Image 1 (cartoon, rainbow, N blue to C red):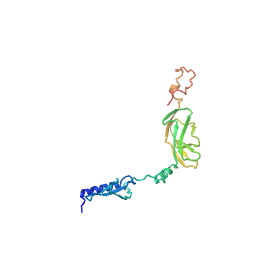
Image 2 (image 1 turned 90 degrees about the vertical axis):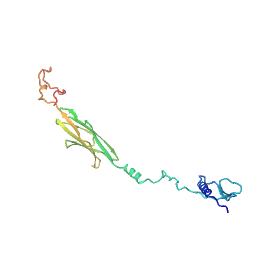
Image 3 (image 1 turned 180 degrees about the horizontal axis):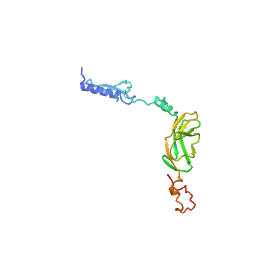
Image 4 (image 1 turned 120 degrees about the vertical axis):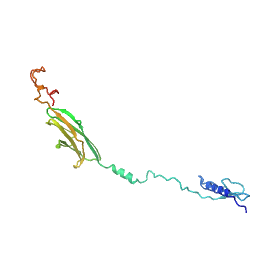
Length: 209
């Protein structure tokens, strides 16, 4: 009996694996025994070769299929979708500017604010606090303050929903009220400025403190 050399056996094994794992699942394999006893496998039909039934082999390295668009959402995606229902709100005073100097002998200051909300239902309500005192409460986005004393003042606006729940608070705004003083000698210098009537020019800046 003729023995197949070791290297031929190894080569035969490699050929078999290559044939069995070939990409085409419909390829036909043939077996042929040579005169020296060597067994050869091929995909070509030759004289003396017989067909060999080969089962399809599925590689263990087959890529994992991705979920289709219709697959159920993951927990993270569900959480993100639920996050869209969260209430979001912010508010800021738009006028006057922070640390603005307002010259008004009547102490008149126009204050406006703007709110940005998301998923808030119903009417919004505001509170304007001046020097830690509630000065206005209602739905308007601005008010006119009168008779404010000269000096420094601090403003803050609070935002509420229709049920009275506080949604947001603005940053504290600082303003300075300047008023002309009748006790300033520069305003009572007689006719030095050419004004024989002695009237005070309230619009000037020389009399500001």
